[in-house]
Length: 199
Picture 1: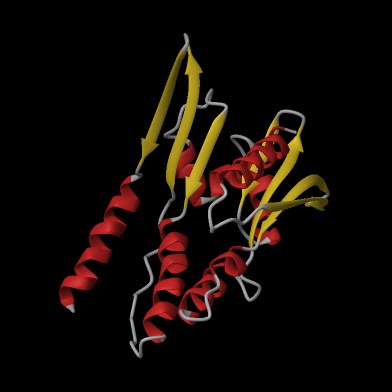
Picture 2 (picture 1 turned 120 degrees about the vertical axis):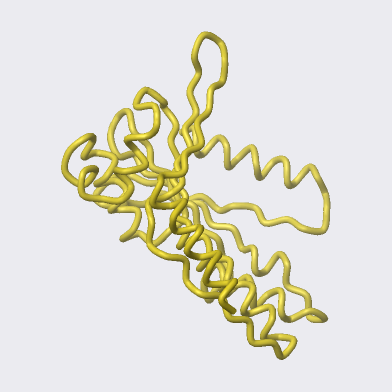
């Protein structure tokens, strides 16, 4: 319900802004990992399409898929846990499994567990950012954009590491946040920087 309200508010603000760039979300109900889900779809490719700059639409399709549409999912893992993400449904199903595993099972086996243990377990809001995924996602768009001008941009893959962790918590009327970078991620950043220096 909270996810629906936030998307509806976003749509209202976009409509009131009355600017040239508008990509309202369409909301539908569905199921992921046998859990009820809300799916929000925005046609970003269509919103930025410009016949005079075809590279922009191609870049959006490279980043969001052949239809150029961004998909956000909110999944009710249980009565107290919601998973919100933009990924494949298989990846989201694994996120649901991880969230419900708590301190055992997948949490101990996954690299996400390394980051989880560094965050405040009482925080009601937690987010994970995959550095390798973020680099790959950004590279797809950048490489497509460069190709429209005849360029051949080479972006090496980021090494597999634990994700960045972010948590937010309300405590004694204060908003407290954490931003953690596990040691193996810092080593991965150093390794990645050396790859560029070698070139």
